[in-house]
Length: 348
Image: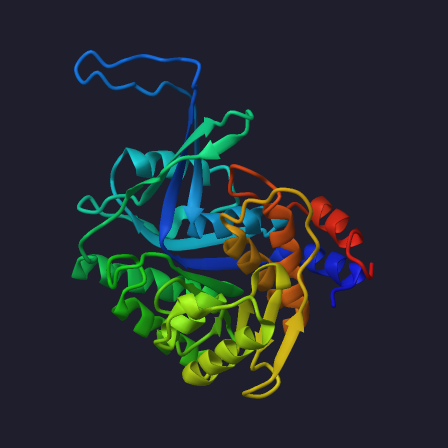
Protein backbone atom coordinates (compact mmCIF):
# COMPACT_ATOMS: atom_id res chain seq x y z
CA UNK A 1 0.00 0.00 0.00
CA UNK A 2 3.08 2.22 -0.02
CA UNK A 3 5.40 1.90 -2.98
CA UNK A 4 9.11 2.61 -2.67
CA UNK A 5 8.62 5.54 -5.04
CA UNK A 6 5.94 7.03 -2.76
CA UNK A 7 8.11 6.42 0.29
CA UNK A 8 10.98 8.30 -1.33
CA UNK A 9 8.59 11.10 -2.31
CA UNK A 10 7.43 11.50 1.30
CA UNK A 11 10.98 11.50 2.62
CA UNK A 12 12.00 14.12 0.06
CA UNK A 13 9.14 16.40 1.17
CA UNK A 14 9.80 16.27 4.92
CA UNK A 15 12.75 18.72 5.10
CA UNK A 16 10.44 21.46 3.79
CA UNK A 17 7.78 20.93 6.47
CA UNK A 18 7.11 22.79 9.70
CA UNK A 19 5.15 20.66 12.14
CA UNK A 20 3.63 22.04 15.31
CA UNK A 21 3.12 19.86 18.37
CA UNK A 22 1.02 20.49 21.45
CA UNK A 23 0.73 18.41 24.57
CA UNK A 24 2.67 16.83 27.39
CA UNK A 25 6.44 16.93 26.99
CA UNK A 26 8.32 14.63 29.38
CA UNK A 27 11.95 13.99 30.18
CA UNK A 28 12.89 10.33 29.81
CA UNK A 29 15.86 9.68 32.10
CA UNK A 30 17.56 6.29 31.78
CA UNK A 31 19.79 5.11 34.64
CA UNK A 32 22.08 2.13 34.10
CA UNK A 33 22.65 0.20 37.35
CA UNK A 34 25.80 -1.90 37.49
CA UNK A 35 24.96 -5.12 39.38
CA UNK A 36 28.66 -5.85 39.81
CA UNK A 37 29.18 -2.73 41.91
CA UNK A 38 27.59 -3.44 45.28
CA UNK A 39 27.51 -0.98 48.14
CA UNK A 40 25.43 -1.11 51.30
CA UNK A 41 24.04 2.06 52.82
CA UNK A 42 25.40 2.56 56.36
CA UNK A 43 22.22 4.41 57.35
CA UNK A 44 19.62 1.90 56.10
CA UNK A 45 21.48 -1.34 55.56
CA UNK A 46 19.95 -1.51 52.08
CA UNK A 47 21.84 -1.87 48.83
CA UNK A 48 22.68 1.50 47.29
CA UNK A 49 22.33 1.08 43.54
CA UNK A 50 25.38 2.29 41.65
CA UNK A 51 24.66 4.31 38.49
CA UNK A 52 27.37 4.14 35.86
CA UNK A 53 25.55 5.86 32.98
CA UNK A 54 22.76 8.41 32.60
CA UNK A 55 20.97 9.20 29.35
CA UNK A 56 18.35 11.91 28.97
CA UNK A 57 15.88 11.98 26.11
CA UNK A 58 12.70 13.90 25.27
CA UNK A 59 9.71 11.69 26.06
CA UNK A 60 5.93 11.62 25.45
CA UNK A 61 5.49 14.53 22.99
CA UNK A 62 9.28 14.41 22.74
CA UNK A 63 9.12 10.85 21.42
CA UNK A 64 7.00 12.07 18.52
CA UNK A 65 9.55 14.86 17.95
CA UNK A 66 12.47 12.41 18.06
CA UNK A 67 10.79 10.32 15.39
CA UNK A 68 9.85 13.26 13.17
CA UNK A 69 13.41 14.57 13.40
CA UNK A 70 14.85 11.14 12.53
CA UNK A 71 12.58 10.99 9.48
CA UNK A 72 13.96 14.32 8.32
CA UNK A 73 11.29 16.91 9.14
CA UNK A 74 12.82 20.36 8.74
CA UNK A 75 11.31 22.27 11.69
CA UNK A 76 9.44 21.22 14.82
CA UNK A 77 7.58 23.75 16.97
CA UNK A 78 6.32 22.36 20.31
CA UNK A 79 3.75 24.17 22.45
CA UNK A 80 3.91 22.99 26.05
CA UNK A 81 4.62 23.91 29.69
CA UNK A 82 7.63 22.78 31.72
CA UNK A 83 8.76 23.61 35.22
CA UNK A 84 11.68 25.87 36.03
CA UNK A 85 13.89 23.12 37.38
CA UNK A 86 16.82 20.85 36.65
CA UNK A 87 14.68 18.44 34.68
CA UNK A 88 13.67 21.28 32.35
CA UNK A 89 17.34 22.22 31.91
CA UNK A 90 18.23 18.67 30.90
CA UNK A 91 15.21 18.38 28.61
CA UNK A 92 15.85 21.67 26.81
CA UNK A 93 19.49 20.68 26.39
CA UNK A 94 18.36 17.54 24.53
CA UNK A 95 15.87 19.48 22.40
CA UNK A 96 18.74 21.68 21.22
CA UNK A 97 20.06 18.63 19.36
CA UNK A 98 16.87 18.48 17.26
CA UNK A 99 15.46 20.86 14.61
CA UNK A 100 13.25 22.37 17.33
CA UNK A 101 12.07 25.96 17.65
CA UNK A 102 11.71 26.22 21.44
CA UNK A 103 10.16 29.68 21.39
CA UNK A 104 6.72 28.37 22.35
CA UNK A 105 7.85 26.20 25.28
CA UNK A 106 6.71 27.90 28.47
CA UNK A 107 8.26 27.47 31.91
CA UNK A 108 6.15 27.88 35.04
CA UNK A 109 8.00 27.90 38.39
CA UNK A 110 5.02 26.33 40.19
CA UNK A 111 5.00 23.34 37.83
CA UNK A 112 7.20 20.26 37.76
CA UNK A 113 8.79 19.14 34.54
CA UNK A 114 7.19 15.71 33.97
CA UNK A 115 9.86 13.04 34.14
CA UNK A 116 9.93 9.29 33.59
CA UNK A 117 13.00 7.86 35.35
CA UNK A 118 13.77 4.41 33.99
CA UNK A 119 16.33 2.30 35.89
CA UNK A 120 18.02 -0.30 33.68
CA UNK A 121 19.75 -3.43 35.01
CA UNK A 122 21.30 -6.51 33.38
CA UNK A 123 19.54 -9.79 33.97
CA UNK A 124 21.23 -13.18 34.43
CA UNK A 125 21.54 -13.55 30.65
CA UNK A 126 23.30 -10.20 30.36
CA UNK A 127 20.33 -8.42 28.75
CA UNK A 128 19.48 -4.92 29.97
CA UNK A 129 15.95 -4.75 31.39
CA UNK A 130 13.89 -1.80 32.54
CA UNK A 131 12.96 -1.91 36.23
CA UNK A 132 10.03 -0.15 37.92
CA UNK A 133 9.68 3.32 36.45
CA UNK A 134 9.78 6.35 38.78
CA UNK A 135 7.39 9.11 37.70
CA UNK A 136 7.48 12.82 38.45
CA UNK A 137 4.20 14.49 37.44
CA UNK A 138 1.96 17.40 38.37
CA UNK A 139 -0.99 16.90 40.71
CA UNK A 140 -2.57 20.32 40.16
CA UNK A 141 -4.08 21.98 37.08
CA UNK A 142 -2.41 24.70 35.05
CA UNK A 143 -2.87 28.18 36.49
CA UNK A 144 -5.31 30.43 34.60
CA UNK A 145 -2.61 32.83 33.48
CA UNK A 146 -0.41 30.00 32.24
CA UNK A 147 -3.31 28.42 30.35
CA UNK A 148 -4.18 31.77 28.75
CA UNK A 149 -0.60 32.24 27.54
CA UNK A 150 -0.52 28.65 26.32
CA UNK A 151 -3.61 29.28 24.19
CA UNK A 152 -1.92 32.32 22.62
CA UNK A 153 1.14 30.26 21.73
CA UNK A 154 -1.06 27.49 20.33
CA UNK A 155 -2.89 29.93 18.07
CA UNK A 156 0.38 31.26 16.64
CA UNK A 157 1.77 27.78 15.95
CA UNK A 158 -1.49 26.42 14.54
CA UNK A 159 -1.64 29.23 12.01
CA UNK A 160 2.01 29.02 10.94
CA UNK A 161 2.64 25.26 10.87
CA UNK A 162 1.86 22.89 8.00
CA UNK A 163 0.16 20.51 10.41
CA UNK A 164 -0.13 19.66 14.08
CA UNK A 165 0.41 16.65 16.34
CA UNK A 166 -1.59 16.59 19.59
CA UNK A 167 -0.61 14.35 22.50
CA UNK A 168 -2.76 14.11 25.63
CA UNK A 169 -0.46 11.91 27.72
CA UNK A 170 -1.52 12.49 31.33
CA UNK A 171 -4.23 10.16 32.64
CA UNK A 172 -5.77 12.56 35.16
CA UNK A 173 -8.22 15.15 33.84
CA UNK A 174 -6.81 18.70 33.61
CA UNK A 175 -3.45 17.78 35.13
CA UNK A 176 -1.49 17.97 31.92
CA UNK A 177 -1.15 20.51 29.13
CA UNK A 178 -4.23 19.39 27.18
CA UNK A 179 -6.79 20.89 29.56
CA UNK A 180 -10.48 21.25 28.78
CA UNK A 181 -9.89 24.90 27.88
CA UNK A 182 -6.95 24.13 25.58
CA UNK A 183 -8.91 21.33 23.89
CA UNK A 184 -11.91 23.60 23.29
CA UNK A 185 -9.69 26.34 21.89
CA UNK A 186 -8.00 23.89 19.54
CA UNK A 187 -11.45 22.72 18.41
CA UNK A 188 -12.36 26.30 17.51
CA UNK A 189 -9.13 26.69 15.52
CA UNK A 190 -9.92 23.51 13.59
CA UNK A 191 -13.44 24.69 12.83
CA UNK A 192 -12.03 27.93 11.43
CA UNK A 193 -9.48 26.02 9.30
CA UNK A 194 -10.94 22.57 8.59
CA UNK A 195 -8.27 21.74 6.01
CA UNK A 196 -5.44 21.91 8.55
CA UNK A 197 -4.16 18.39 9.26
CA UNK A 198 -4.27 17.75 13.01
CA UNK A 199 -3.52 14.26 14.34
CA UNK A 200 -4.71 13.55 17.90
CA UNK A 201 -3.52 10.90 20.35
CA UNK A 202 -5.02 10.65 23.85
CA UNK A 203 -4.62 7.85 26.36
CA UNK A 204 -7.80 8.46 28.34
CA UNK A 205 -9.97 10.99 26.50
CA UNK A 206 -9.83 10.30 22.76
CA UNK A 207 -13.63 10.30 22.66
CA UNK A 208 -13.69 13.95 23.74
CA UNK A 209 -11.82 15.13 20.63
CA UNK A 210 -14.44 16.00 18.01
CA UNK A 211 -11.94 17.54 15.63
CA UNK A 212 -8.88 16.50 13.66
CA UNK A 213 -7.91 12.94 12.83
CA UNK A 214 -7.78 10.55 15.76
CA UNK A 215 -5.20 7.83 16.49
CA UNK A 216 -6.39 5.41 19.18
CA UNK A 217 -5.61 1.78 19.83
CA UNK A 218 -8.39 -0.74 20.43
CA UNK A 219 -8.31 -0.37 24.21
CA UNK A 220 -8.60 3.41 23.94
CA UNK A 221 -11.58 3.02 21.61
CA UNK A 222 -13.33 0.83 24.14
CA UNK A 223 -12.49 3.08 27.09
CA UNK A 224 -13.86 6.15 25.34
CA UNK A 225 -17.08 4.29 24.54
CA UNK A 226 -17.54 3.32 28.19
CA UNK A 227 -16.76 -0.33 27.50
CA UNK A 228 -14.40 -2.58 29.44
CA UNK A 229 -11.09 -2.43 27.63
CA UNK A 230 -10.23 -5.83 29.11
CA UNK A 231 -12.81 -7.27 26.75
CA UNK A 232 -10.51 -6.50 23.81
CA UNK A 233 -9.43 -9.51 21.82
CA UNK A 234 -6.96 -10.00 19.02
CA UNK A 235 -9.86 -10.49 16.63
CA UNK A 236 -9.72 -7.99 13.75
CA UNK A 237 -13.51 -7.90 13.39
CA UNK A 238 -13.81 -6.90 17.06
CA UNK A 239 -11.29 -4.10 16.50
CA UNK A 240 -13.21 -2.90 13.44
CA UNK A 241 -16.45 -2.67 15.42
CA UNK A 242 -14.79 -0.67 18.21
CA UNK A 243 -13.02 1.69 15.81
CA UNK A 244 -16.15 2.32 13.74
CA UNK A 245 -18.15 2.98 16.91
CA UNK A 246 -15.61 5.57 18.09
CA UNK A 247 -15.50 7.22 14.66
CA UNK A 248 -19.28 7.54 14.69
CA UNK A 249 -19.25 8.84 18.28
CA UNK A 250 -16.75 11.60 17.52
CA UNK A 251 -17.75 12.22 13.92
CA UNK A 252 -14.08 11.99 12.96
CA UNK A 253 -11.97 9.69 10.77
CA UNK A 254 -9.35 7.75 12.67
CA UNK A 255 -6.38 5.45 12.51
CA UNK A 256 -6.77 2.55 14.97
CA UNK A 257 -3.60 0.62 15.74
CA UNK A 258 -4.09 -3.13 16.17
CA UNK A 259 -0.63 -4.34 17.25
CA UNK A 260 1.11 -6.76 14.93
CA UNK A 261 -2.00 -6.80 12.71
CA UNK A 262 -1.21 -3.24 11.64
CA UNK A 263 -3.72 -0.44 11.44
CA UNK A 264 -7.32 0.36 10.48
CA UNK A 265 -8.11 3.55 8.57
CA UNK A 266 -11.73 4.29 9.48
CA UNK A 267 -14.19 6.86 8.13
CA UNK A 268 -12.07 8.32 5.33
CA UNK A 269 -14.46 7.15 2.57
CA UNK A 270 -17.72 7.37 4.44
CA UNK A 271 -18.87 6.97 8.08
CA UNK A 272 -18.46 3.19 8.22
CA UNK A 273 -15.64 2.68 5.74
CA UNK A 274 -12.73 0.59 6.99
CA UNK A 275 -9.43 -0.14 5.29
CA UNK A 276 -7.13 -2.67 6.93
CA UNK A 277 -3.43 -1.95 6.38
CA UNK A 278 -1.43 -5.02 7.50
CA UNK A 279 1.52 -4.64 9.81
CA UNK A 280 5.12 -5.13 8.77
CA UNK A 281 6.75 -8.47 9.63
CA UNK A 282 9.15 -8.36 12.59
CA UNK A 283 11.26 -11.22 13.93
CA UNK A 284 13.10 -11.64 17.20
CA UNK A 285 12.56 -9.82 20.51
CA UNK A 286 10.74 -6.49 20.45
CA UNK A 287 10.22 -3.51 22.76
CA UNK A 288 6.90 -1.76 22.12
CA UNK A 289 7.63 1.32 24.28
CA UNK A 290 7.04 4.36 22.09
CA UNK A 291 5.62 2.36 19.17
CA UNK A 292 2.42 4.41 19.11
CA UNK A 293 4.34 7.69 19.03
CA UNK A 294 6.54 6.45 16.19
CA UNK A 295 3.40 5.43 14.27
CA UNK A 296 2.05 8.96 14.84
CA UNK A 297 5.19 10.42 13.26
CA UNK A 298 4.83 8.16 10.23
CA UNK A 299 1.13 8.87 9.74
CA UNK A 300 1.51 12.63 10.04
CA UNK A 301 4.56 12.71 7.78
CA UNK A 302 2.71 10.88 5.02
CA UNK A 303 -0.45 12.99 5.29
CA UNK A 304 1.48 16.27 5.18
CA UNK A 305 3.33 14.99 2.11
CA UNK A 306 0.10 14.40 0.21
CA UNK A 307 -0.31 10.72 1.06
CA UNK A 308 -3.64 8.93 1.25
CA UNK A 309 -5.02 7.49 4.48
CA UNK A 310 -3.85 3.98 3.57
CA UNK A 311 -0.38 5.25 2.62
CA UNK A 312 -0.23 7.10 5.95
CA UNK A 313 -1.21 3.95 7.84
CA UNK A 314 1.38 1.94 5.91
CA UNK A 315 4.14 4.41 6.76
CA UNK A 316 3.02 4.45 10.40
CA UNK A 317 3.28 0.66 10.46
CA UNK A 318 6.70 0.75 8.79
CA UNK A 319 8.15 3.30 11.22
CA UNK A 320 6.81 1.35 14.21
CA UNK A 321 8.25 -1.92 12.87
CA UNK A 322 11.72 -0.35 12.91
CA UNK A 323 11.46 1.22 16.35
CA UNK A 324 10.11 -1.86 18.19
CA UNK A 325 13.26 -3.77 17.29
CA UNK A 326 15.37 -1.33 19.33
CA UNK A 327 15.47 -2.86 22.81
CA UNK A 328 15.76 -0.95 26.08
CA UNK A 329 15.17 2.44 24.49
CA UNK A 330 12.47 4.47 22.79
CA UNK A 331 13.66 4.04 19.22
CA UNK A 332 13.48 6.06 16.03
CA UNK A 333 13.62 5.18 12.33
CA UNK A 334 15.93 6.80 9.78
CA UNK A 335 15.14 7.01 6.05
CA UNK A 336 17.69 4.27 5.30
CA UNK A 337 16.13 2.00 7.94
CA UNK A 338 12.70 2.58 6.41
CA UNK A 339 13.91 1.68 2.94
CA UNK A 340 15.54 -1.47 4.32
CA UNK A 341 12.34 -2.37 6.17
CA UNK A 342 10.26 -1.77 3.08
CA UNK A 343 12.39 -4.24 1.10
CA UNK A 344 11.59 -6.94 3.68
CA UNK A 345 7.85 -6.64 3.04
CA UNK A 346 6.35 -9.77 1.45
CA UNK A 347 5.10 -7.91 -1.64
CA UNK A 348 8.15 -5.65 -2.07
